[in-house]
Length: 591
Image 1: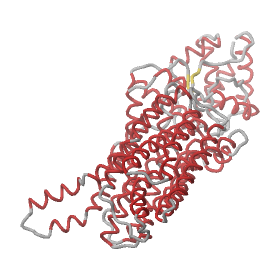
Image 2: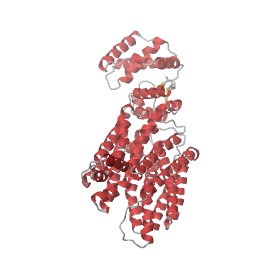
Image 3: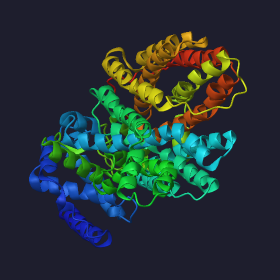
């Protein structure tokens, strides 16, 4: 029997806690959890309630001034509970986020997360594809130099490099939703302001800010994957990547079909009595294109209020109650039930945490026990996350991921530029007119549109084999296939064959990039996931900055073979790096 002194001490302490801790009500614990714990501890209802209040006081007030008498009483009570349970350590039935996600499957809630995060990627793709059209249009209107035209693309990539690191750190430190909100706000605001730029300098500044905002697109990937169960996660990532392809196709279609131009014609017919109106509106062509490109981010802002925080992130931050609320909301929307018990960390993380904090515990800590008073969450993000990425356990994976991400970005953006440069190089170099100024090819929009369609079969192929061959094999197979398609382009080919080869190379490049975007978040643990992917994305942007020197500079100098050989070497080494990845993540739970 529990002594009356312990009863009085616990009641007094619980009363003090309630007054000093914002009217905490310890009786709000669910009956299901109480029933499970009572059954496992073999206690009567009154005995269990007494012991539970004592344990609650101890855990909730590690930072407070719990009396030494209560500490001693709790130790005695824990010893008594252990004896009443046959000498076994006291445990409770628990479940992890992976257990909950597996039980719920992929339902309506995850479908909303998919569409929301996918729209973020669609917006990112549209902003990047815009670079293929914005430079020539601005050059025609403001008569800027070719160097200034190229600078419009370079500042966007420079902003993305900064943004990728910035939003990754903020995401791991302050939450996925916080990073997404400010990233979307910056992209939307700077995107719309770009359309009203009065001169080249202001346009350059706004596009730099857009680049910083778009640099947070990788947070959408981590956020989405943290809601998806391990089973078929690869296939759902491929579906998610389809939004990127939709974005590239939409931007190419918007420019090629001259949707804005059709609007201009309609306005001119309505106001035909104003002769100069058409001329004025046509000069605003690229401004309308910038405005339409920023619309998806504006849509994201409208629905941001109903987006949830990642339950994995909340668990790592020890905000178990909020994490449970998110999972309960998911279960209600999907019309399923959560596993019995209480939510806990991933078991490997929790076990490590128990070792480091066992000296400060008065009650036994077991592998499946829920921890609620750790300061682990406050140390996530920033330097701690970077140290985790460079720890002996993750160092090899991190360095290889950085190189492969650089190579993938180098190849992908290079293929986009090759689409517009190869036909021009064949025409100029074949006729010996090396000094001829670059002119806008009327078929440019069509070629970009066709090669953008190539991403769809690339996604289909990767979706079929990613959960069959695994992440590593899928990446190196597609990279070697991309090399095979690029090989014949080392020499001049006719326009149809060039487009077909670029189509195949773009499909393989998109497939390998998508699988890499799936693989990296699966390798990194939750406390460092966004930071790791953010730094890798930033390194990838360096590839995007460097590739114009090869795809544009060497081709304009009629060094086509050398340019293609560089792409082949980069992709070949990246494929070897994929083979050397130490971890295969197919079917593995995210930590």
